Image (cartoon, rainbow, N blue to C red):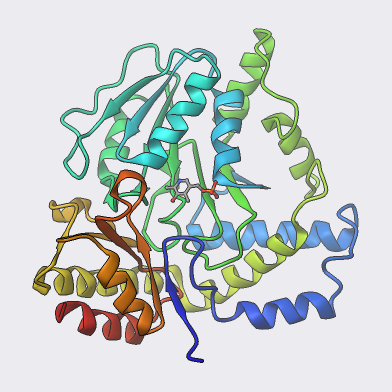
Length: 357
Ligand SMILES: *Cc1c(COP(=O)(O)O)cnc(C)c1O
């Protein structure tokens, strides 16, 4: 049987080197080594350093390996928000993060844009401690303009800024020095099996959690930021971590460094342009996000006239698994992942076919 190619927006096609890296993990007994051993500490240090180099993270930023982006949402609310955060919501994932804040009874506020449109204003209430932005909204393929984030930084030097880059990093360029915390999980652009979330923080985040603790705010226990830091400073984790996941991430980061982030980002732009062109040409598809600057480069979303059942089935016959719409758009949209694993040749074949639908 013909092998399938997953163009789903996460989990997605597994990065093509992972098969070999898995074999190496077995050969090196990676799944049996102690997480308190020097071998693990060296692994942690190396993956952290390589990731910092791939993403061009400032030197004083730290990186923690926890379980998912969902977990990071909870950790951010626990560790970095006393009373109120403000959430720019451009789709379902951003909305879900806001839900964590309300579950924790924070007086958090929200600016919603209407789906696929744009934010009318980027105002933030005075009492906001942390501003949340979703750089690439995977649910509807809406990209938040990075320049607007840099503007928020200038306007609010005293507030923390948190960026969800789950389906953007490292395929989309971003200046991490403009934000205090950012995060992703590995089953999107890194092409890895799910089960690892990567949390990036700067020292301002430590100051914030220390201040909250001084004021007797409960900042959590499991994976409390200061506990992560105490372990991380020794290149360790508080719990027995997903060592295999960390190992595989390190290997794929090295593969990506070899190709260079710049090249990956340029390829992403090129392939995205092909996809949007093909969608414009198609008689039944049209881009869900109309404004070009806000069209996601990594998750291309199109409306399907008459529903998506037929197109999903026909792509399936070619061995191409593409994503359904998210939530209420389940049967009206298609979502096509354009991740680093997806080659120009694969995208060209796909777009040939799309233009004819
Ligand atoms: C997938 C996704 C998440 C959730 O990631 P998990 O690893 O499932 O927690 C959050 N935000 C965005 C933008 C996503 O695409």
